[in-house]
Length: 445
Ligand SMILES: C[S@@+](CC[C@H](N)C(=O)[O-])C[C@H]1O[C@@H](n2cnc3c(N)ncnc32)[C@H](O)[C@@H]1O
Image (cartoon, rainbow, N blue to C red; front, side):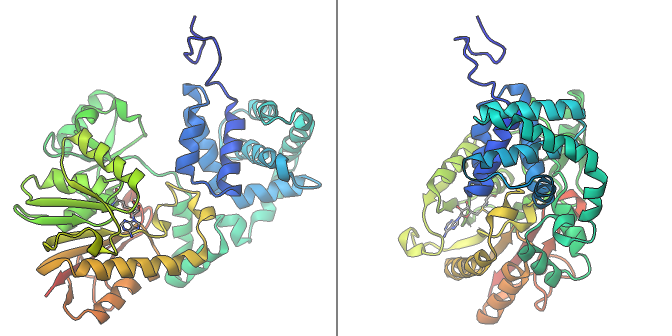
């Protein structure tokens, strides 16, 4: 006999309380530094299929508003839950998040959250958690009033990110912080070898999946509501891929031509490698490198799904002497490791996992990869530098420094604002519904 989660043994392997599962994920991310993209899929295996979207919503939501929820929790408790009881702190935050930000009826939110104590092995705390959530309901108005005029509790970012954005964008940093707290839309890249974006849009509409085209990327469709990829026509055959419209600009700006040798220097998980190959089937060679062997497997999976081929190399892009065959490239995409501050709306854990001190290290790594890759480029060749960062140090300042040190590097302006004094194209999160991204196109003299 099958139980309701499908286990034929009658054991509920996948029926954990979703609030308890969320509390465990949050504890693993915030307290133990695990990334949300690792912790969440593992937890999703422990809950019923119908609860997966709710688990994601709870984890994303709490990470978005963490300092505010922490503040409410602290105000309502005599002493914090620490040590082995720490996951219970996150259970309280999960409860508060539902009361503040979801349409789940309050009585159900409280009851289901309180029930989570069993799975967190702290049944004795049932009364306490119930009391905290009930007290919040009574004091909600006065607590919310205390959030006003406090920049950390209003925007819910670590102060180092706020300071950097204030310095880089004095007139609009608040809008950027707010955009990072929005829910990101689901964007598709339509594979032109299968359909035009308009044809694919019509096909999706026939399955009640409505979408909008992009004003920026000619191959992008933004879905009005996210859907499971299994619902997308021809997804398994590579007719479309999930990729933000800003990320789709990489292959369009690189503009690979027939017969060329292309290097994708930091390729995993391979979204941009696949896009380059989809758009240009007649390359002489496509080499994709990544430092992370596990992530490199995902490049292969992505290429296999779409039916594309590339030479994949597990290597360090800053040390070409360890992997390069001495044949120069016509074009190089350097999608550099970065702070990912442009994609916080998709990865709210970045706020709490990154440190200010990481930025200087990343800038040095980007500089080293840029320098090493420049030597691999033919004269007359093009290097496209990309990051999903919105910090000037990783973007305009990095490229300004590179142009000053390399007289054979000529900036190819992407738009009229892209000048040697302020090089590159900075896309801000939320702009035309896109992620924050940076591109600078350089030609070798
Ligand atoms: C921004 S992600 C690349 C995303 C990818 N281009 C895509 O579109 O799917 C940066 C990648 O750089 C890789 N990386 C970091 N340091 C590296 C290095 N020294 N050499 C090669 N790859 C590196 C990381 O493993 C990560 O996969």
